[in-house]
Length: 117
Image (cartoon, rainbow, N blue to C red; front, side, top):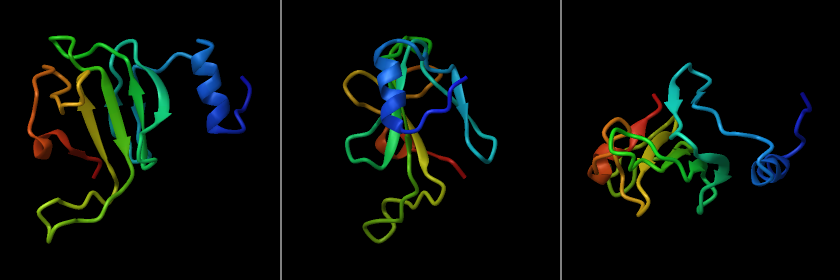
């Protein structure tokens, strides 16, 4: 197995379909994160503060298409938006709504952010 020198090399391999995304990834603390079936990645998220696996079909209704693994954040708006000191995971459908990764049903923004603590 070759050692990749950059994230760009990994993205190129994904585009060439040489590399297939895993079914799950594991955090350094041992938490398993399910990757939707058939998703590709990792790719950087738009704000550059995490990465995602995209284009999958997961959940019992097959509406889970994305999992985002986000960097740690601080609390905002006097604590109304909580801190995620170890980051968080968010599963989404095709229209970027937060969803339950088991059922695929939509969730509120607050419930769809899963702490990695």
